[in-house]
Length: 191
Image 1 (cartoon, rainbow, N blue to C red):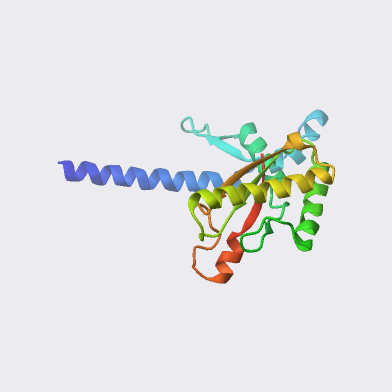
Image 2: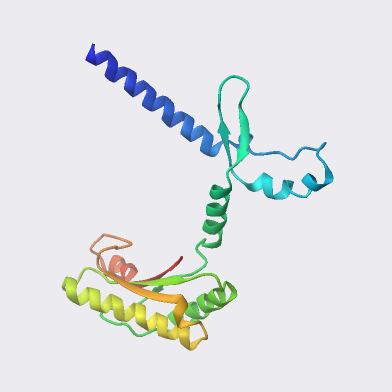
């Protein structure tokens, strides 16, 4: 008897997973503008076509598509945070900014100033060589160097925060010089 119940639960789980997958990515589930709608409603289709929808299945004949406004707001915020801010890299055991890093930071500063609502967290990272304490301190010095340079370019300091992850979040976990070079970096995350 228990064996049948577990199989029944597994079938429901698979069914629910498929429904969730279809509901989140179904292109046919988008709200289409009603061509017979009043002129006031005709102004909204451009927004409604881009907003995700959820189906409210309340029984037979109730398959109504509704605009999920909170998901649309999350989607718009995520679109604004697309990787427009580039990471910079550092030399071994260094936190000074190379000419290449300064050029990247100048581009990042332009984007930050053009998006006044964006707050940016600067994450300092290191390769795995050195103690945990040393790498956390070096990651912080790297993040602060990037922040100070952005501030010197006119970015308000109150829109920037720093955090150090030391060696905790490598881009490449390999133990090669190329991997170490990738991991010595500062990342810029918009919030």
